[in-house]
Amino acid sequence: MKLVDTHCHLDNEKFDEDRLEVIERIKENLEFCVNIGYDLASSKKSLELAKEYDFIYAVIGIHPIDIAEYDEEVEKELELLGKNPKVVAIGEIGLDYHWMTEPKEVQQERFKKQLELAERLNKPVVIHTRDAMEDTVNILKEYPNITGVIHCYPGSLETAKQLVDRFYLGIGGTLTFKNSKKAVEVVKDIPLDRIVIETDCPYLTPEPFRGKRNEPIYVEYVAKKIAEIKEISVEDVTKITTENAKKLYRIG
Ligand code: NI
Image (cartoon, rainbow, N blue to C red):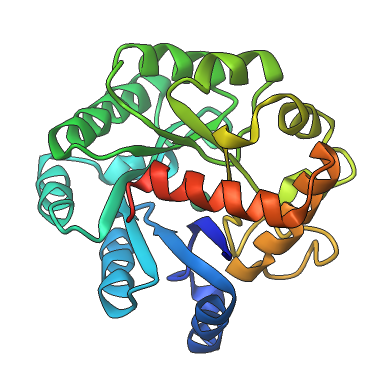
């Protein structure tokens, strides 16, 4: 069994020059990857990629930083795209109080609308949350049937314990950084069957490539770090996190 990248952005312009080679490396080295939209255009590109390659799946939605474009028309288009079976979740959606392009209230209202969209389509969600954990958790409590993943989980161990009954925690390259104390604590104490591995590429490149462009096959370095923290084999990390990814996105 191979690893999965549960969160990548292959449509990003940083892959324009060698996208085919990057995709070839995914085919060789990973079980599959999930490409995540952040606005309507990238959501469409995400589905195009998923239609072209059987080992790529799509997630569609409007990111809190791009939430200004969200209106009824966009929602209708997302709902139509979301009916395609290669769309495995709605995301990335959530709250970002760090890069506030829209006020908190607007972000919250449109986050809720997209949670309701996920409910209508019967799909899990990919959550982005930055400097907004408390509001994110409270909103998710209003939707007890929603499942999914908290991408690049930025919270404390205590909050993680409240979330893992319904949500997987997405762990990426930041785990390998020197100042990743909080993430190490989370990985150590949260059972492996609630963790999925991601890159968020082209961003958040793990050590030893920190500062360079990230790509899906670098999930390997995250898996190695998890194995080291949990004192288990990389094979076990691979097997369990790949099964988790399939359960999360209801694949296979
Ligand atoms: Ni992302």
